[in-house]
Length: 479
Ligand SMILES: [Zn+2]
Image (cartoon, rainbow, N blue to C red; front, side, top):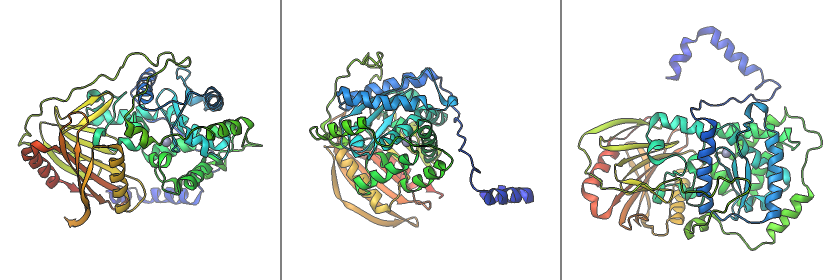
């Protein structure tokens, strides 16, 4: 594929290519970032972000500490004012809250809401590092990455229409949702491609410099995260792939950003940090997710619209009709060809796609729920097949108290590939029915890992299991 277009370019292209190689990257100037195509209006960002924020605050404990919250808001405001003019949206409502969770993490939602884990502030070595994470998150918002991603997704599937983007979460009881926020709220807006992540790093570095912070502190924060989490990389790094390449890229950008006498630590930072460190220990995100607790959403002066009606309406699970014997072919995730019954629905979400029968999925209290179906997902994290498989298994078991692994993960060769697989028993949170879950994984040639998971209720294994086997057998991978 690549070869064809390459050859046809001829000599001129070769010369141009040679020139690009010889002249150092982005010759002596800051990287110019542009918006991705986006069919949503600015008001949509606001509306969707508000819905997701509401759901986030029901699922995660907000730290009600005036001094710490005011301080974070001051740093946030400083960064907002430093957003380059072309990415300023006066319509957006930026605000900043602290989640009482111990892991190092932060996220922001379309239109402006930002949430910082208490653990992140406690771990930062100075105000610059904390501001670095905030500038990165702010950049996702300013670049409208959430709705840009939804624009892409809508081209492919019905996800946005059926589940409603705002409160929708893919994953539900067996998905990867629990990895990210408590019960995965707004995961849709949190998991971005590497391209988007790099853009947020680069614009984040530019915002840092404009706000008189040292852009290298954004890179330094990755070192701090590695130091604190022992390289195991929960939280921020697991939402944000390949930390190692990232500091090189940020430091490269930093060469073009002059900051004299940058803000490093401040008295405010030290006071707030020691105040947080002196509080009773915070639970981890996994513990919060396991507890299943719902938190009341309080009215907030910064954001009066929050705390209104529940906008992410439930979608009930329904009667599931038997799988059609006619199959339809799909091309998925750039490398997969697969067939699925033609009465099943395809639901795409970034690096993941579900095939589910109608009635076999729904939404309850903002969480997507699947009772029947198959999911294909590509995990871009660094690591061996074994490591990523173990990580996935642990995440599932931690996030799903009813789930039990049946036997150990084993490996075998099939179709000239090495696969790992394991099985689980679960009690579905929505239906309370026992279900069988299987997980398969194989490493692709680019190092990423393809995960396949299937779920079938135990009392319906016959024809649904047959359909799933037929889907699995149809799978062709061209990597
Ligand atoms: Zn990010």
